[in-house]
Structures are given as C-alpha cells and as structure tokens.
Amino acid sequence: MKVSVSLLAASLAAVSSYAVADVTESNPVIVTATRTAQTADASLASVTVITRQDIERSQAQSISELLTGLAGIDSTVNGGYGKTTSLFLRGTNSDDVLVMIDGVKIGSATLGTTAFEFLPLDQIDHIEIVRGPRSSLYGSEAIGGVIQIFTRQGTGKPDAYASAGAGSYNTRQVSAGMSTAQDGTDISLSAARFKTGGFNAQKPTPGPFGVDEPDKDGYSNDSATASLRHRFDNGADIGANLFRAQGHTDYDGDPNNTNFVQQAVGTDLGFSPSDIWRLTLRAGQSQDDSDNFKDMTFSSRFNTQRDTASWQNDITLGKDRLLTLGVDRQADHVIGDCPPFNCVYTVDRRTDKGLYGQIQNQMGNNDLLFSLRRDDNDAFGKYSTGNAAWGYAFSKTLRLTASYGTAFRAPTFNELYFPNYGNPNLQPEKSKSVETGLHGKQAWGGWDVRAYQTSIDHLINTVCDINFNCTAANVDEARIRGLETQVSTTLAGWRSGLSLSITDPRDVATNHVLPRRSKRTLRLNTDHSFGKTRFGMTWLAQGRRFDDAANTVVVGGYGLLNLRAEYDLSKDWRVRAHLDNVFDKQYETVHNYNTPGRSVFVSLGYQMR
Image 1 (cartoon, rainbow, N blue to C red):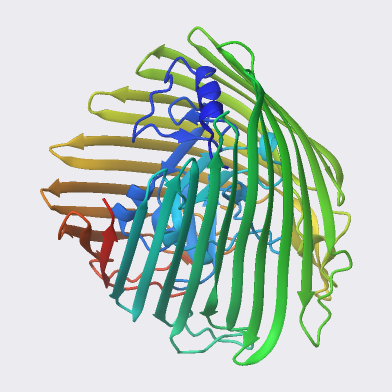
Image 2 (image 1 turned 45 degrees about the vertical axis):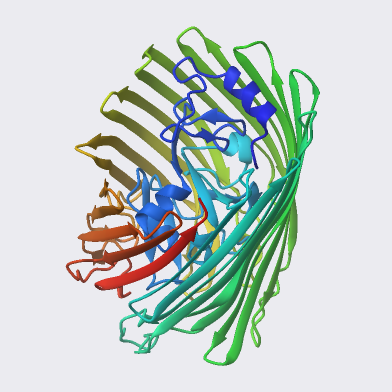
C-alpha cells in the first residue's frame, strides 16, 4: 500500500484545515486511517506512526518491546523472544486487531490472532497504528483498531545497510539490505537472521496437567523482503512486494516446539483515468503456517492461506471533498492435521466480499468523515458497519475531535468448525464505540488526550456442560472505557515522549476485569545527542492484571528501566549498545511464565550516507 504522488496530492488537498499538507518528521503521511493519504495531524482518528529512525533509536528487538506502553497498547508474552505474544489495543481482545503487511491482511484464520512474535523488526520500515473501529473500511477484526506494517523498500536512490550484533542469552543478529533506483524503477532486497538460546519459558506448575521442563527455550528466525516498483511519466505506478519469515521456536508443554512460516505477497497498480479520479487495484496472499512437535514427534499442523483483492476509487470533488468507493474480496483456506485425533475442519474455506464508501469533507474550521461498509460472508451472511467523525479547529494549534463507529469480528474456523468444539451457528462479535479528543501543538511540542468507550456484544467464549463437553457460544458482553494521553517535547536537547493509558475493560455480566490487561500503563522515552554520541532511556510502568476471567489469579505490576547508547565511528559506521531491565526486576505478564532479567546487546551497523 505505497502512496503514489498524484494520490498524495489529491488526498492532502481535500483534508483538514488544521494541518494542510504540513509533512514533517513529527507529522508524517499515513494511509491506514482512511485508506487515503493524509498527514497524521490531519487524521480524525487517534494514530501513531513509528518510523525506521524510531525503531533504530529504541534498539528494540521485538514488536512487543517496541509497542508496549504506547497510548492504548498493552501486550503479554509467554516467555522470551519467539513466544506467544498477545497484543491488546484499547483493552479489546488480541483477535480484535486487524494487522496488515504492505496492505495485505495477515494472521491465523484458525486462532484469529497475528503471530507478532515472528515478525522481525529488521525488515520493517515503519508502522502505522490506528486506534478505534475501522470495520467500515476493512471489515472483520478492526474493533480495537488497525496495525499496518510497511517493510523496507526502495527510497528512490541507491542505498545499502548492514548490521551484526550479539548479547545476553546467547542472542545473535545479522541483517543486510540494498536498494537501487533508475529511470523511475525502485528495486530493494533485504535479509536477516535472529537467533537466541533463550531461557526457560514456563515455571514448573503442579498437578496432572502441570508442566515441568526446566530447559532453555530458544528461537531462530530467518527473514527476507523484496520489492519492485515502477513509476510512469503519466503518474501511474505498479509495484510488487514480498515478505517472508521462517524459523523455529521452543517452549514448554505439549507440544513444546514449532516450525513456522509467515509470508505476505502483494501487488498493486494505480493510475488516474482523469484529473479527479485515482484508481487502485491490489491483490495479495498471506500465509500463517505452523508445524508443532512434542520433542521430535509430530503433533499437529495448522495452516492459513488468505487471498485478498481490492478495487479502490478516490474521486476529488473540489478542493475540500474526497470520495472513496471500493470493493474487497477475501478468501480464507485452512488446513488442520493432528494425528491420531481428528483435526480436519468440517468446512475449510470461506469467502467475504465487502463494498465500502467514504466521504471526507472540510468546511471552514470543520472536518467531517462518514464511511459505510457492507460485508457478505459465507459463514454468517451480511453485516453492515459505519463510522462518523468530526473535527473542529479552534486555531492552527488546537483541535477538538469526536467520533462514533461500529465494528465486528467474524468467528474463527476453530470457533465455527473445529471437531467436537466448533459451533456453525455463531454470530459475529459486534461493537459500538464513541470517542472524543483534544489535540494541541505548541512551540515546545505537542499533546493529545482521548477518552473513549467501546461496548462489545455477542462475545464468543467456551461453554462446557457437566460432562465437560465444550463448545463455542455467543455468551458474553464487554464494556471498555479508557483515557489516553500523549505528550512530546524537546527540552534542553532531550527529545522525549510520554504516553499514559488508563483502561477499564470489564465483563458486563460479572463486572470482572478482562484477563491479562493492565488498567494503568505509563511509558517515557527520552534521547539526547552529544556530537557523535547519543544516549537514551525507556521507562515502562504497568499496574497489576488478572490472569483469569474470575479475577482470582493476580499478576503483579512492575516497572522497567532500559538504557541505550550509540556512537558514530564514521559517516557510515555506528556502534550501538543497550542494557535492558537495568535493576534486574523479576516480573511476569502471564502467570507462571518467565521474563528476561538484566540483559545487554551490542551491535555494529553500516548505513550508506
């Protein structure tokens, strides 16, 4: 989902008196919030953009480390690197977040979640995070929001980079990439390897179903990306991109190790039939494959193949109005195999077709957005969603926003068709969300405050009878209220960002807090340059959470301090080091699962300049 020059110009011309095409490092162009190009400040939605510079500055080594503690984002990890990672956006379930790579939807259609633990940061150029419902543009899963990952691609000029590093827990990393450009054609290639010996993922647990495997649970990931794009003199452009990660991860239990593949392939064509009309065609395919083993014995296989296609039309109706009309098609195919048990799905394919429309309008100091979508799914029939948003600019430095949106999540193949568990009569989970916010920009920096409430009906849960025969059913209802605050500034040379999230996610029937979500999270990032040397720190503090729906198992809160430094050896070469969990805090995000103690990592990097 790359942004063409003509589409960018048309989109920016039609949105927001508050931030008209003021593209800067702190106000980048985004495409995920509206499926059209706009600056982050112009968006009526709550958005965050994490650039390649942010990733390198943070020295994070996983998406969980990079995102946890940003406004509205929480996560849990069942052990160290490469272990099950659940991401909660605005307190919603981990399967209520839509994830894309370069415009291609990814994730498991059997579990309904995305394997964030297998997506290497070495291959990522930037990430766009949109909070709040977006089913009116993207369909299923976008209840909590959308996360779109953009891989490293050509920059319009020759480029080359490489890095290698090593650190605690026998962790090693190496990556390299290059891109070239000539006569309107960009080509890029990159490859990376990450490997760690790890530590024992799970503490011993008693009982007949307990786990006691006091070993080191390692992880390895080999990844590659490739992209090709050509821009024609008439403004048309065509491109293709590939992302692939494969490897192996160890953990505790039965099974206790997995071979995995994550892949996304996409192509797109954009051109303008007239001065006011931009037409974009896209097609893509993603894979989420896992072969699971107990020691060396094959245990199960669960594969997802997702084929997507879209036809989008962006029509500029004067300088203040942009109309978007489009059609999406998605086809999911799953494979289940777990001998000697029956894991063959009674239905292993389904198709969803979506028709959507959106209008963005600017009238004086007012910005308006309306969107509607109608999905037709093989599993449950037709479903409609919508979104309405309004913004009012009191001045060039202060804007008020308000929005209302509906969204849904389609039941997974496990919930619908897994043998002796699935329920083909399930209805989709559905949500209603309201939000209001205030956004300001001052000479010293910027700030953003958002308050929201999301109500989710028909939540799918497991119901068991007295004989422990269990099935999936629409039985629960949740209500989530939250407040998000973001502040960024540069004081005395220190570039700082503060995020505070207060979330109250509750089961309506029991008034219990939804499991594994902290109600309070604070994150502070600050960095300073001293000539060739840069220092930085991240402080993350989270309150307690409950590990179970009954709120009987408490996971304590914690605070972590991470330090980092880098030094320019020359114009092209740089050495980096970071010390995580400085005070060697013993903590958990999931009950009985270990987390890394004090650890260090040092790397040497090359970037052609």
